Image (tube, rainbow, N blue to C red):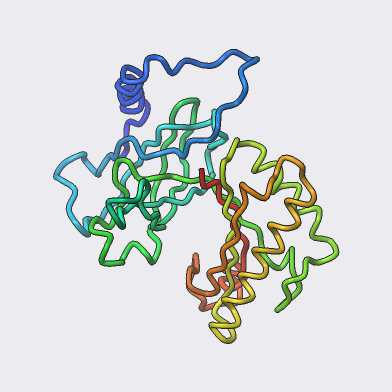
Length: 253
């Protein structure tokens, strides 16, 4: 089915701009504001018919309330999170990673893309198995662990420094209050050892960034290791295992 994207996007942007009339482009001398995570603004279902139901399938387009002004560009792959309240006394809910959105169109003020689900979307706590209006869409950068580390080691390789230029530029594109560095492995070896290795690698990346770049501070960084528990593809071929051995740099807030 051919989707008439531009008229629909213009319509949605018109509604959005009416609600945010004061959100005008800042003058060139204005200091860049602190990063505010993008959210899904609207969902276009196939034929735009029927109500969204648990487990409902089909190709959808997801419209996001930010675009090129926060360095979201065509071809980017962003993480999608569902926020869930875990206790009434907590100001913020828990973020659950449900998949990724690949950006197909982007301009200042909006972007849109298609969704690929992650394994955690099947958790019982996630009622609707597709992204919803209001879900967070978070920029990320993926680095092959083989570029940064020798196999089975958590000490940075001698030639790893050049790769961190990309990381620093990625972080500098935003004004983040918090950056998450995630370590991931493939499924080879012992699960406990993989968990430990991913933790140590994430911490090594955090230490290098803090010690190398003055604009990256200890207070804005957090390291997390997930071992083999969050693959992005099945661990069924050497090529896929290579993709799963990775470091993710995530603009959290």
